[in-house]
Image (cartoon, rainbow, N blue to C red; front, side, top):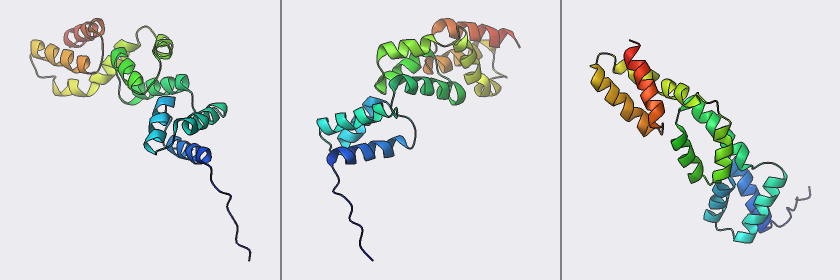
Length: 162
């Protein structure tokens, strides 16, 4: 039986394979892939070639990533626009792309997300005096990136509805 000879690997092919493997877990931005490949000691030209190949095959798209990230946050871990902007910026998504993606959200999306974020802690705070519960709600939502208008609206609803 003849032994199969594998062709010699090229650095660009190795970088592409490493990037595809990295993308297998979840989508990533171009900046995240670049950082990952840089940590694997690939040179800049090799990384750029691998990223160009990924873009050509539509494996990487920062706008699609931003939409996915916002949808995941809305579904599992609600955050306000401020927090989403910060998270997407840290992941390397351009500001104009973030503006487009967040601009597509419904006008009352932040209020709905804030109410969803509060669903669990509100049960723990049910027996607290109104003033203390307001303070807790405010701090909780502010830490999750909701703006003050949203916080005030949700606080008014949650404290006076009961």
